[in-house]
Amino acid sequence: MPICKTDALIVVDVQVDFCPGGNLAVPGGDEIVAIVNELVELFEKRGGLVIFSRDWHPQRHKSFRDEGGTWPPHCVQNTKGAEFHLDLLIPDSAIVVSKATDVAREAYSAFDGTGLSETLKAAGTERIFVCGLATDFCVKSTAMDARKLGYDTYVVLDASRGISEESVRASLEEMKETGIKIVKSFEIESL
Ligand code: VGL
Ligand code: ZN
Image 1 (tube, rainbow, N blue to C red):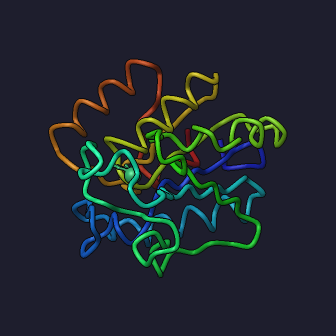
Image 2 (tube, rainbow, N blue to C red; image 1 turned 90 degrees about the horizontal axis):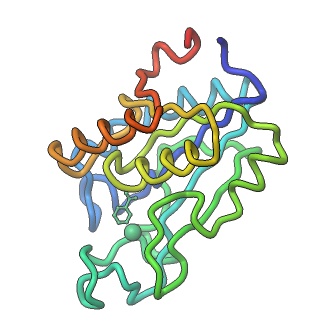
């Protein structure tokens, strides 16, 4: 079925810190930008909803190593590293949601504390396509939440990159088990 107005695209965390040279670089993170831009244009043209999430941590967020967490400091609010990749196309009509803004709570999913589920409900969304960074963390959590909310959910593999091969493999299995479909961008109009 061609992309239409009941479809939503969620572009997860395509930010400077998650790209090579950033503080928590995902291997090949910047390689997805051209494909993501094509998806954004397609959804935009067809009247679908386009959502961009961004990791938007306060300084000393609990997920940072110095605070007992697992990650190096990254995507700190209003820093260069938290900006979207400079070549990422962000139409005026797109919705930007900021997550993990509470210093004491980790939030991997774009649905977590952002009001995104209400936005999608109001828009009459039926299918959700998720892409971005990282496949094994925020993309996975976002897709799992979409699925839990009952949406027909797709992860666009070539428009996503993961932190480790091993955990990407496990994540894809976990997602498939819940009914999430793993697809390539070239096939999304014939699903
Ligand atoms: C992410 C680790 C820490 C992600 C965010 O966007 O996948 N990963 N914060
Ligand atoms: Zn983070």
